[in-house]
Amino acid sequence: MTRVAFQLQVRPELLDEYVARHSPVRPEMLAEIAAAGRRDYSLFLGAGGTLFGYYATDDDRAAQAYLAASPVAARWEAEMSRFFVGLDGRPDQAATSLTEVFHLEDQLAAASATDSSATTDTEGRAS
Image (tube, rainbow, N blue to C red):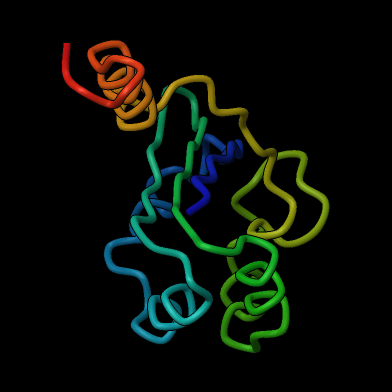
């Protein structure tokens, strides 16, 4: 699984309308996002219109290609593009990706694996 986070800047004068357009998102667009293989998708709005998004997927390239070819997504993105500052192209394809620096479950799993290997002897017995 791949976790993807991104950042966009919403035009401050359009913040209320942007939020309203997501309350709720059209059912056909929700279905396309799911069909593309994106799940656990969230958007977070920060001060001044800074928007952070997150989703998980098994194959982000395939998800992007699916949405790029989708007429439903193309219509939605064309309507939504006016909300963003300094964006060339469709928001779903042109957002700035963020680098993951911490994930709790990954670090817990790594710590558990380290603890498990430290408590066994060379013959695989617990010490």
